[in-house]
Length: 70
Image (cartoon, rainbow, N blue to C red; front, side, top):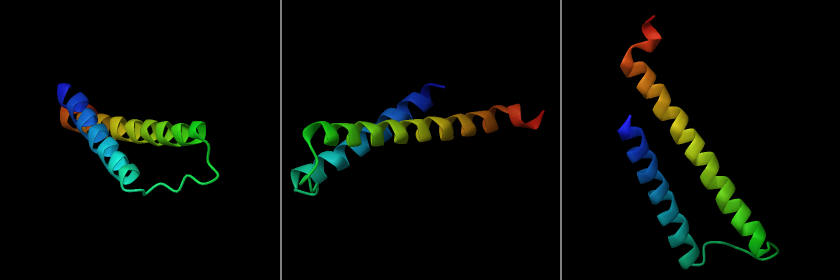
C-alpha cells in the first residue's frame, strides 16, 4: 500500500514540474484570467489528477490482492 502513496506523490511532483516549466517559459496565457482564477484552475487540475491516480492505484491494488476473484 506504500507504493500507492509513493506513486501518487511522484506523479504529483511530475505534474507540478511540468506546470512550473510551462509557466516559466510563458506557456500560460493569463490574459483575462485573474490570479485567483489561475490558482483555482491549477488546484482543480491537480485535485482531479490526484483522484484519478488514486482510483487507478486502488484498481491495481484490488486486482493484485485477489479481491476481484471472489
